[in-house]
Image (tube, rainbow, N blue to C red; front, side, top):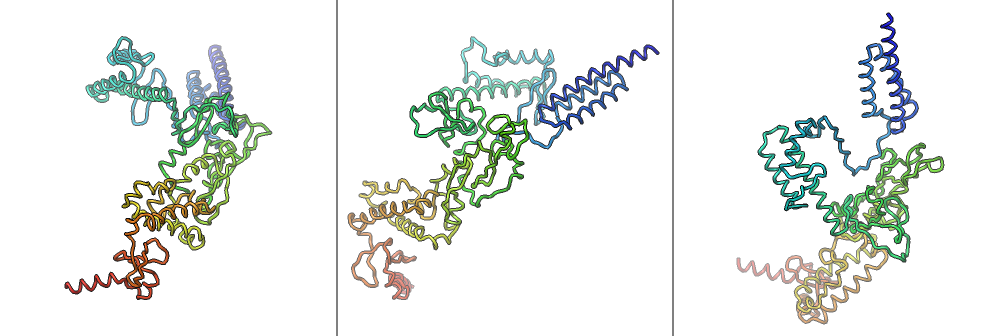
Length: 526
């Protein structure tokens, strides 16, 4: 009887010890995942129930239940309804390698276990490949080194893999070594490129160090932490593609994808006017950095990296008029831009508030001719007189282009260089950029085109005899006046391309004399 009492006493003491460990573990977990008091009480209650149940089954069951319970709580904490703040563009975390047990990767690939036999086999493979496993570098005393040496050993590893039996432990080790060497080779190439050019490639940004400017006309701010960049004090980097700039300490925390990559992959606008979906669709988080917006409970971290207090618990959601999404104050600085959707649908050039990433994207796309106005809003040409005038002048200059391309004098004088800033005007008459529409609204584009139009017209009609000799004389009135397809009051026959006065063509019942002669000649031949 005394032995049973001693045994029960020992079991109770053991249960109390593990209970204390469970309570302390639950408290630490609760503070790390931000659980409330109710979740902690629930976890402790379930832990106590498991301990009491285990105490009735013996010390061994107690140890097993408590250990499995703690492991389950650590590996999968209770759900709280709040998602982790992960960047949407960051890859998932790499699983940790646990010594003594294989790690299961997607696709069924297993890393070899770390038992003595496998360690000997791995050492033999390292010796065969000429790799120092401790530092994963090439062994000294060999002729090849660096990138060239890694490429040689990768090819050797491929040959060894093909010689091994399928699903063997040696083959799995060789595949694992091949992956390591390829990753090392990629890192070496990137380091070599960075060392040669000083350019860091992060999230598509090509970041190069900027030279400090002693006198700056305005303050420069970091696009990551929204703090001032002091050129003399701070080392800063700037993206050559989109203009993104940040401190050197903020390089590893960049989450915004390069707007230059987006503009190259999908050069198109959102042509819906402020396509808002609401904060609930974003789970009340910033669309870029995923920090919680609106009122935030104390204990979190603000978008500027500061701990929330009663004074800064309000994180203002700011709407981007271009995307319709909501952003935190760090990702939305109340920058203003003209909206392409409002211009094409309403001819509205008022600036609206946009996020930082939308501002960079719109700035890069502003001069790209991607708006086909005749398809997007054909009625716009009826209500905007300047737009219709620009359309007619562009069509006329495309006709003039045919004269200038076949003229030796025009080629020597490089007359088409006058349209260098608007290269798409030489290619077609229907595509517009956002900057074109802005300049039409302000009157700048019309003045520019009138100047170029006069230069082209003067060369064709007056200065060059070759171009002037390619003109037409109206066959109906036959007054001797030389007319061209781009002249006002002139119509071009769609069948034979003959130019006639529009009045004369109307009086002739819209019949081209040349086409009439050709039809009569065909009848005679028949």
